[in-house]
Amino acid sequence: MTTNSHLSSNELRGLLNSFWDRSLEIEPSAHGLLFTMPASYPDGWQVVLELSQKTPQGIRLSDRGKTLAWLTSQGQNIETETMKHHLQRLCAEHYLKEEHGVLYRWLDLPLDATDIHVFAEGLVAISRLEILNDHRAAEEDVADRIVQRIFHDADLSPKRKHKLHVTKDRSVSVDYYVEQRRPLALQILRTKSDFSGTMEKWGFRWQGLKANYSGLAPIMLYDRHNQIIDPYSRHIGETECELFCGYDETDRIHETLASLR
Image (cartoon, rainbow, N blue to C red; front, side, top):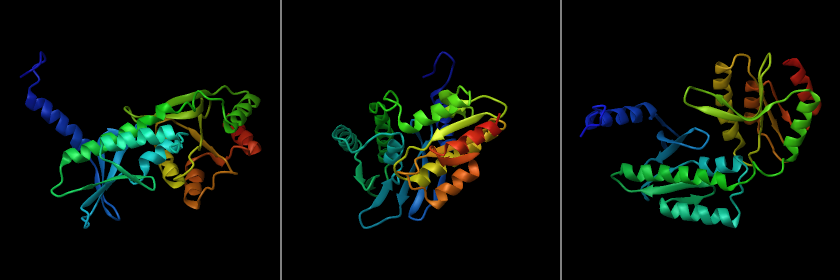
C-alpha cells in the first residue's frame, strides 16, 4: 500500500524506527537502567524511565517520582479529592501504582514493550492533569505582585509566559522576559518539593537558552520563608543564573536589572 506521494509501508516503518532510534538513550543507574521514551511532558522534556534489575517480584519500571513532582512544580495540588480521583482513574487505566510520589509497575519476564509504552502513556496522561489547575488564571500571588512592581519601578515591560527556543523543536516558557541590551529571563521557583531535580532541569535549560540567545541573563527567585534550598540546588542557581535570590530581596533584584541595561 502506498500513498499519493509513493511512500511505501517499509519506508514509513523505517522512518518511524529511525525516530525511535534517535530519541532513545540508555544508561546505567544505581538500580538498573535509565532510558528515554518517544513521549514528552507538557514542557517538552522527554519521559525518562528506570528499569530495576530483576528482583523476587519481577522487574520494577518507574518514573523515579518525576511526574507528580512536575505537577507539583506547576502549582497543582495533588492532594485534593478531585485530583486523587483523576490520579486513581488514570493509574487504574494504565496499570500504574503510586508510592511516596513515585509511579511504578512490576513487569514479568520476558519483557513486553507494550507494557512499557502503556506505562509512558499513563505518565503523560497524568502530567496533562495540569490543565485542571486554574492557577494561571487565578489572582496573582505575592511573588508575582512583587516582581511586577519591581519591573514597573525599573520602567521595564516584560513579556509574560514567553516561549524561548532551546532547540529548533523544543521551547521553554519563562515567567518574564525582557528584550534589551542583555535580554533577561526571570523565573519564579514554585515547586514545593524535589528542589534539586527542578533546579537540575532548569540548569540544563539555562545552558541551552544561553547558547541560543546571546548575552541572556537568567534570574531565578524563590520564597526564602517557605522554600528551603539545599546546597546543590543553590550551587546550580548561583552558577547558571545572573541572580539567584529570594523574591523579597528587592534591592538585589533592582541592582541586577540596572546592570543589564
